Length: 276
Length: 246
Image 1 (spheres, each protein chain N blue to C red):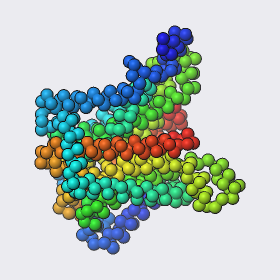
Image 2: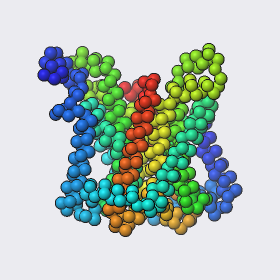
Image 3: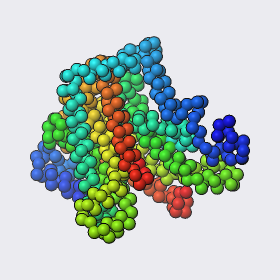
Image 4: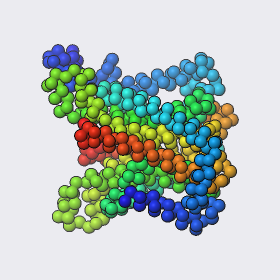
């Protein structure tokens, strides 16, 4: 008997208090995730190849991967689509992260300012900030500058909020320990303070990356002459849905890949057993 | 205290408008005049109605389905571990990239916009509620108390789990509204057909700066009002229940 059924036979423990099984139908949870993913890909493959969904709408999964591969070996794609987007995303991410942590620290140290800003920071993501995109274009003209600026504006607030959250979570004993050891301000910040705040900051950074990605792609989709968003948009308008799906696959891989990487990094850094 | 931030923002805006060319940035009074003019036109009111309909339908669906899916996964930890990463993965994909897919499958009408906005709101709501439900499970004391009182699982859900998840439900609802609104405006900006986003894009393309600023201000107000309303609803319900939602 498995441990779970043995438990049920032994005692009258209700279902909600029993152990969570390690396997269902012989597969672990992780294997079930893979099963679901494979099922979805297979469904796309079958639906597309059988013609149930028209060829102008859906492309078989294997072809999507093939198109992505084709795009990745086309130098033109790198120059006109991939690099402009990635450049904007990375620049925006770095600026939003660094500036966000600094601003978060400054606001955290000034409780009056924090109280004034609090309601607006939490409501910030209700605002469609990229409605300001046309204004930025009017100021800077077309190109990477308005896109990167928009992405920074969009991403920075989550870094600020999560950084402040992290700074809140540093126990007061850390401050007392540092003072009793008589360390300098820099050492205190880098060796004592920051490690406690780091898990929350990393949560903010993860969201900042996603928001930068989202902003850059939206802006390119809307009003741009280069970038992956622009490529997907024009492919759709030219009915070239093969390359369109290829580019979508590339974006999905980048988004999920970097997100997972940052999640792993966050877990490695959560030494204090903090939330993340 | 609460008004300091808007006052500062408007002041900075005004100064920037005066410093820069007024054909690039309009002054606040000019924007307000444009707003009043816009509300006089039938066209704008039609667009407002279309947007409101899209947002409300998408929001309702994402809250209901998100809460159900999140809660269901939360009370079945095994399936949470199996499906959770997939939800997280889908959440991390920028929906904008798959926007053409919505147009390809669902056409250019209001249904594809509603589905797009729904996709924006569904995932974070489901993920948040899933996390909150599972948190109750890890707080063993609730479950042990329920077991010692010989509660059936249904009673556990009604008496312990649902009230414990309620605060997170409200937070998720507010977040979900913001994201659904964002998704709606995005969809309208891209698949120009009707709605406030479409008006914004038209103003962008004709570089009618007065219009642009007026639209942006209005969109900001539209986003903030429901957020405030939902917050007040939460506070009112909390007070009615005697200061705590648990």
